[in-house]
Structures are given as C-alpha cells and as structure tokens.
Image (cartoon, rainbow, N blue to C red):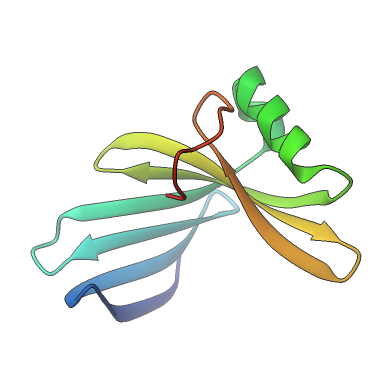
Length: 107
C-alpha cells in the first residue's frame, strides 16, 4: 500500500521517494528522474539480522531502547542497518555495517 510520495532535491538532482507498507512493515524507495532505484530503506526485526549486526546495534544503542530498525540497500547492495534509539525523551539514529561493523561514514 502506498502511504506517501515526495519529490526532493539532493545535490541538485531530483529524487522521487515512495513510502510503502509491505506485509505490515515500512519500506521507502528512492529513485532518480530516469527511474533508477537509488536506495531502499526497509523495516526489519532485530532477530532477523545476522548475529554480528544484532550485537553491533545493541552495543551502539547502549542503555537506549531500539525502537525501529531499517536495512539500507543502495544500488542493489545491503550497505547498513540503521536503528532509531530512544533514551528517555531523546531520539537518535545509529548505523552499523551489514555484519555489525562500525562504518567509515554514515550511509
């Protein structure tokens, strides 16, 4: 089911984004003006991740609570897992690589 659609400019280029609900979870797809898929963000369960990614996210969350996790796929390749963390009233995002490793830069 399509929840929303937006058009954004990123680095001077037009990017189209669709927000979907697929099998009860969120999935966002970003495409360029030619229809090439740039990125897919898909909500996933912690238990479905490789053990290294589970440990990496849990360690990075520290005392915070993992609220939501998304896989990040770019050009058909899984590049990271991103988690929304809640600590009291504060929210933050963390990312780890596909096997739970620290990333050289945010994806």
